[in-house]
Length: 454
Image (cartoon, rainbow, N blue to C red; front, side, top):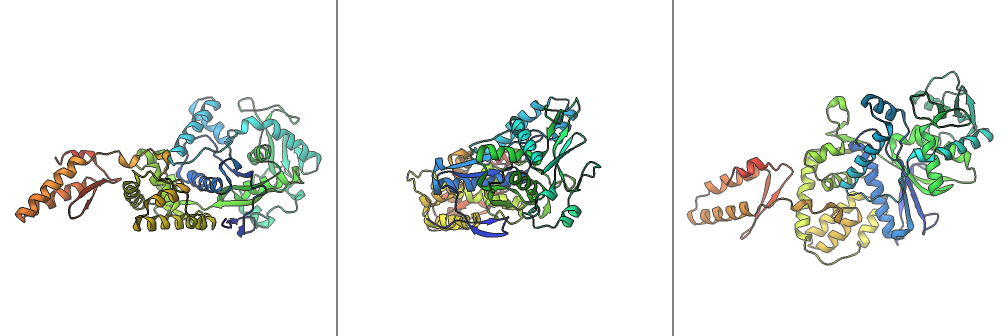
């Protein structure tokens, strides 16, 4: 078996990954706050963890990996969204969760083993808060309960920041009831028009950071293998999770490895509504980008590097995948992933190296291995439902063959060049050999232009 090395944010370097129990490998990903459609950046850590999940299932066995991804359905953004739309909060969260699951499925992601909702774990959160107060790590103040950062000597170890840097760099709520500016909320009061649960500190709701600690502990235990998310969560969210979890469960180690993916850009710029380059996953799907094409573009950049989404990359991915499908569509052979694919993926989930290997398989006409290694990272799997074969271009291929045959006889290629030009402008890639013609639809396919040709 190849030695698996992953970049551990806690150590700030690649380390050898050895699971606590190879028959029960446990991983947790911070999931979405469910108030609106998932944007393109939200999908990146899901795809990264889906590759990790598929890889671990291949290495340790399908039933020996437990993957948990939560839904945050208690949050002020959700409350505001419900108020703005005049809808009940549960209607908002249920609808958004359904959208999210549908969009992630379109990107070829497997379902995690567990998908807990924060609202189902409030009782566990209250017990954690009570334990933290008893052990001197939390205090009550004006209806709030706050975690005392000063009580945890290793605070800042994950992010590598000093207390001064954290105060300067964080959006710290200035409140008179805080003993320390970095102390964070475990429980806060709820007015009558907001969701609330009865507690020893009055009717209220939990703080965001506490939610993941309660859910991960209940489903994965005091110590588990991997915790992950976008690198924007390192501080304060993951820093706070570590502090409260280690203080509440001092015999455990919480997460042994921390995996964080870099952010996403669009055409070289940070994705922003003000720049007009903000896209949800659904936006791209409705623009005609197949989920597998989106996934391919994501996997072409290593998860620890900034990823730049461009239409050029999407068009190239579309063309590549269609060529691969064309050669692999009728394969009956079912191979295991190659040792080379396992080896490169073992090096900190090096998906660009796997894709380079897939190109190598294609060039050497090793199509069965191409498909098997593509499956390892969630490409060319049954989940994608043959999107590459949605358009029948056979009548245009026949017409092009006839025009080419006529041109070969008359030596007049004007009509042939004109037809090829029209097909190209309609978004069709033309592949011609000595005795064959094949047309492949691209992402720029324009049906209106195509139908006007013949």
